[in-house]
Length: 279
Ligand code: ATR
Image (tube, rainbow, N blue to C red):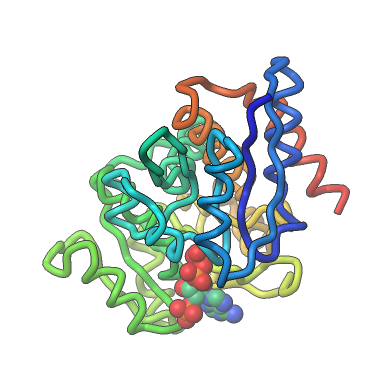
């Protein structure tokens, strides 16, 4: 029996154990995926402990995606660039970190929305870890990106970390007037902030005044399945996508990283969708 799992704090809300274990069962894979609540001071022990216990690999979630980098012997080019790891593979003499979040976002948009992001103009709300993962891939797709964040300095830091001279990456103010000025110039709006999650259900991360049916609006939140942002966008005729696709695809890409195989995506999708609806 292979062992996998996810490390985070809190962890009881994570849908990953259910999603992975259901997929293992479906394809009769002899593997078990466990949630692991870890205290910050014991993160190093937890990583080495998982290796000592013979885990094949683990996922890493909030708040350890950055902190965990110090415990790894090797990093993928992407993990290095965005300073974030959500997937670890244990090898005999190495502990390899990778991030599947950004590629998961792109795959979800490609496959679920059937939308090609290449060369598009994209407004990204937020400048945290999720934004970094997504911006990394949007840049590789030749997108022109506007980053708007509650804390402007953090958006500037994100931009400077990639390349401050890159004219395809611009920081803008998150004030309504500035968002209303920029939205008519973009094709896509992406929310990477937690604004709209079940604890703040009625809130939107940015002004939606200027959205029209030419826009695609993507929220990486999956609980609730349809955030207030997506509701308003839908009412204006926008193409919309929630965060379930990214959740499933980042997991699928973890399978690729651990075993070089694709999981049964449909069953994973159905499983998380039902679980979110039931909450
Ligand atoms: P993640 O790894 O999920 O991206 P993070 O690195 O903590 O998490 O980043 C969260 C992002 O959401 C940040 O851009 C944060 O803005 P600040 O840089 O100003 O903190 C944004 N965010 C979180 N709560 C928010 C709120 N209530 N209103 C607006 N933005 C918020």
